[in-house]
Image (cartoon, rainbow, N blue to C red; front, top):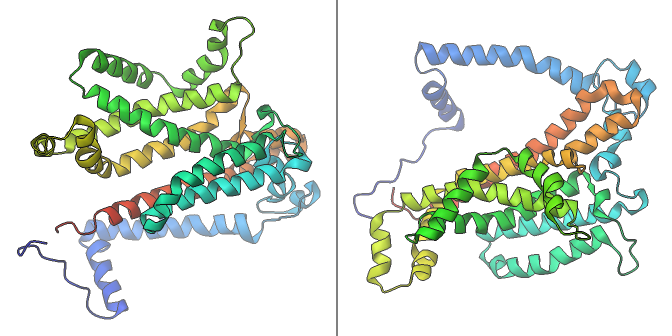
Length: 367
């Protein structure tokens, strides 16, 4: 750190004194901020008690229509009664321990990979975890070996399907988007033109169109007798769509790196790929962590669109549970609220990890 760099002053006083000082500075600084703060407090006081009363105090967990009809609050009994259908879709009931175990294993691999930032010892284990873990997950989901019953992926659904589509989408869309960004920055006209056309075309159409083309139109161009799995087509469509958006995010990061960093690579006689790997990309990717994670969150939520091609993701299985028994139909609010809570929990965790990653990578920088 340079001699002129100054660290921010350490907080002084007791916790209550610091809390009062923070409130005066951030909540009651001037009449307008004070009015906004008081209005927000009044709105929360008006909004939160009825929600708590409906969702918790007067709610019921009993998985029966009769109990829900008598309750004056939320009928969480709908979720309780249809939990396995919501979580695993139409996967064979007696085999649902397999997608549960696969989902736990996948989450463990993801958490282990993300934890490598804090625990450097895990970095060498990231590739082995994925190389070993992904085949195990595939065996658990498909079966057909080791005495496991074969289950077609048309029966996959629920939260495992959502996690698989989003995780595989991230793994492949990230490097593809990075190559597209480098291609758009290339001085070779052919590569640059192909990259620009691809990015602009894909970004110019909604994901639902891409999925529809992959499901309905693409098979029409295949030779007779040749078929491509519906789940694979949906996964490829998600990857291609997300990569185009990531390419623009990465291009912004590349343009934000000072020109002197590129010249530094040239002065060290590094090749193009060496310069990118050692100097440019580490800086560019660090700069675009927030928009990159934002794209991942968007892709995770966009997996709900696969329902249009006959795949029941997590939100799709909630709709399926509502249609499975007409008596449950009027409790759709509870079903969608449960799905929203799960989506929020996962997306919020991704956002918090993004903030943590930014903080960790900025340690040691000059202030």
